[in-house]
Image 1 (tube, helix red, strand yellow):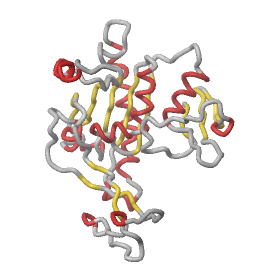
Image 2: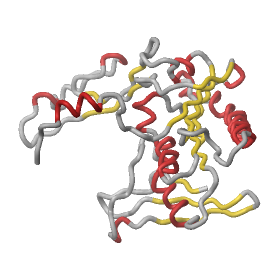
Image 3: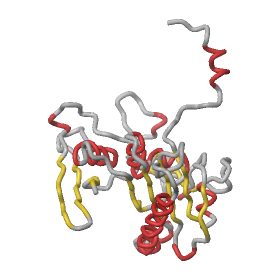
Amino acid sequence: MVAPATNQSGRGGSINTGVLSSSSAMSLTKLSSDACGDVYSLAAPVAPGTYGGTPVDSMKAGLQILLAGDPPDLIVSGNNFGQNLGKPTSNGSGTVGAALQGAFEGIPSIAGSVGIIFAESGAGFPSTIAAFPSAADFMVRVIAALEAEPGDELLPQGVKLLNINFPVPYPSITGVAITRLADRSELELPLFDRNVGFPPFGIPGNPGQLNCATLSVGQACSVGVGIRFVTGPDAERVADTDVFAAGLISITPMDGDMTSRGAGNALYGILSGLTP
């Protein structure tokens, strides 16, 4: 197991870009070794203005350094603390980002995430903590079911990774569904002008600070991260957000290919007359 030394939630596909720079060097530490395997942590650079040790950096360290020339049969990223649903959240998720990196390197990958109930935040999310053993057992059974199918490939043709999300409390789960990434996540993390305030949650403004929309050159304002819950059915058919909200485990097959297949002919007609 190779993981960032510190929490890197929301890093998505972020990587260390300090090519051949000593200031970008990261510390890869072997923390333990037993019958289950080896555990490593990847720490960020200490130089000002640089960061690393992201989930994708950790995946690359495992594949390109520790297992160079001897790739694994499967990559499991997670289980993550908190659900990763919908296209926006899955794009920003470090858990899914690490699994995508594995898929890009040609290795079947699974990302797993255990949901949280925001009302439990003051108590440390006990439903999430209690669900981890059952979620891990389910992941093992998923892998066993995939291995039991005939053929040499672990995942079906066209599938590069699975994004699995577990509602909580785990005993309340009513079934399992194969889903699609929703167009929107069930929650969003918008930025807001702290001078104005964040109306949905009644966060008061700060009159002594500058309004971001009226800044002069050289002035700065304060912005914060809020939470916005998205309700109602998603536009996508069998969306993971809707299935998750209904109390089912969501399994979304993904391929990592962001190429649009739908408008190529129309675009060719529009742009075919262009020259360098």
